[in-house]
Length: 201
Image (tube, rainbow, N blue to C red):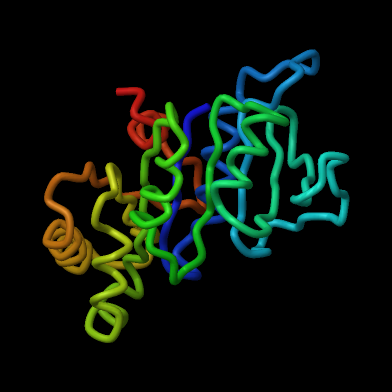
């Protein structure tokens, strides 16, 4: 099982991106598969509706989103939840949707206490609101972007080229090593982006 932490402010498009990415991972899933290809773990109840079904093993709520994908809500310690998902479902990928005020690097450090898990971070930014958030949220932006292997600048259809260039340069100032992609989740994101997010290329 590999782990991806998806960070970004509320409204940046995390849920839309998450569902597209999950569909990409689960694209080859078969009804006969015993384990889901991907499990989404939310650390709060977000825009994805999660019903009240509780697995017999207890500890987290789970709902099947589509073939090859399940969604859980986190309860208690992150490490305990990750271990339970690995033991109970053992998906190819576990995606953790962080809250808008979470620090992905700290989540990564916590999960890496589990031996043998590969953990990646992808961060979403909102091109339209970037300037408005930059000054009051600078420290939080820094904490969300540092350590990310990939950064997705979303909502590029809502800004002009000058603003987009400013956002990209500004994002690069927070993390000079990340791969940066410009996307809009209102349409299908190129599969090359998801491959990069998962470290497949």
